[in-house]
Image 1 (cartoon, rainbow, N blue to C red):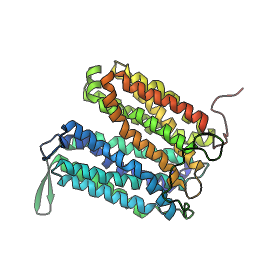
Image 2 (image 1 turned 180 degrees about the horizontal axis):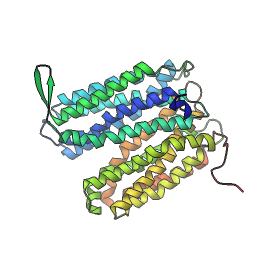
Image 3 (image 1 turned 180 degrees about the vertical axis):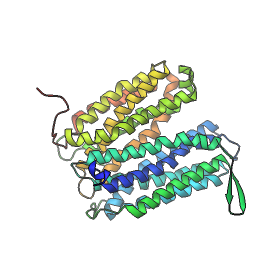
Image 4 (image 1 turned 90 degrees about the vertical axis):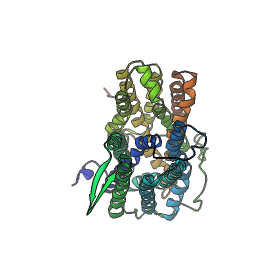
Amino acid sequence: MGVADRLGIDPQVLTLAIARMTESIGNSFLIVVLPLFIGSDVLAGSTFGLTEVAVTGIVLSLFGFVNSPLQPFTGRISDRTGRRKVFVLVGLVLIGVASFSYSLATRYWHLVALRCLQGLAGALIIPTTVALVNDLASAENRGGNMGTYNTFRLVGFGAGPIAAGAMVAGGPYAVALGPLDVVMSGFDAAFYFATSTATLSFVLVSALIRDPDDVAGGGDDALGGIAVFDRSGRGTLDPVFTLGVASFFMAVGIALFATLGDIINARLDQGPTLFGLEFAAFILAQVLLQTPIGRATDFYGRKNFIVAGLVLLVPTTFVQGIILDPWLMVVARFAQGVAGALVFAPSLALAGDIAPAGRSGSTLSVLTMAFGFGVAFGPLASGFLVQLGFVVPFAFGAALAAVGVVLVWTQVEETVTPKGSILPTD
C-alpha cells in the first residue's frame, strides 16, 4: 500500500497536486521577477501615461482579473464535455509559451498581452484541476484530498518567489550549448525556468492523469449563470454562492498586505527580509494545516471549521493595522494563515459535496473565481484605502470577514454527519 493510500488520498490527486506544485513554482517566479523586469532598462516604449509602479500593479493584477470571470465558463464546458485533462494540458501549454515569450519582450504592452494569455491559461487550469480532485475523491475523503491538493499548490507558490530573486541577482549565466557559449541574463534564466516547470507539469499530467469514467455531461446549460438565491427554499442565498462570497472576502483580507510593503517596512522599521518572513508566515501556516484540517472535516463536519476560520480572520486581519513590532506581525500573519486554512479547503469540500453529479467544474468554479477576484481586488483596495490611514484597509478586510461569518452561519448547511466531536465529552 502506497503513501497516498495510507493517507486516504487518491494517487491521481497526489500526482495532480505535484504537477500543480511544479507549475506554481515557475508561475510564482513572475511575482518577483516581473516588477524587477519592469524596473530594468530592458523594456522601452509607452507606459500608457502611467508610472512604472502603476504598470507593475496592472501587470500583476491582470492574471486574476482575466482568469476569474472566465472560470465559470471553462468549468461548465468541462462538465458538458466530461473532459477535464485536455483543459489542463492546453492551459499548461499557454503558461509555458507565455513564460518563454517574456524573454523576447521589449515593450510594456508585450507584458500586458502575455499576462492576459497567462490569465486565459489560469482559467483553463484552475477550475478543471479542482473539479478533477473533486471527481476523484469521495464524500468520505473529499476534505483530505482538497487539503492535500492545496498544500502542494501552496508549497510551489511559496517556494517560487524565494528562489526567483536569487536567480535574477545571480545572472548573467554562461551556458555551453555544444560548440556555442551562450550568455544568459538573470531575467532570461528565470523565464526559462518558469517555462521548464510548466513543461514538467505538462508531462506529469499527460502521462499520469486520466479523466474519471463517470464524468459525463453536466446538463444542457453549458454556459448557464451562477445561482444567487437558494432554489430549494431552505435559505435565502444559494449555499455555493454564499461560500463563494465568503471566499472572496477571505481573499481580499489576505491580499491587503502585499501591496503595502514599503509602508509596512517604514512603519515597523524593518528591512525586506523581515517583510518576506511576514509574507511567508501566512503561506507556512497554510502548508502545515491545509491537509490535517481537510481530513478533520471528513470526520467532524465542514461548516464549523469554515465559520471558525472566518471568525479568526476578523482579529488577525484587523490587528495587522495596529501592530508596531515585526515579530508580532509574523505571529499575526501566521494566525491569519491558520484562519485561511480553516476556510479554503473545507469550503471547496463542502461545495463539492453539494455539486450534482457531473457538475463539479461549474460548481467549484464559483469558489475559485471568487478567490481569484479577491486576490486581484485586495491589493488595489489597500492601495487606495491606506491613504485614509494605515489601519483602514485592515479594518475593511476584518469587516468583510465578519459579514462572511454571518452569511455562512445562516445560509450554509452542514453536508457531513459528524463521526465525533472536536470538544471532549464527559
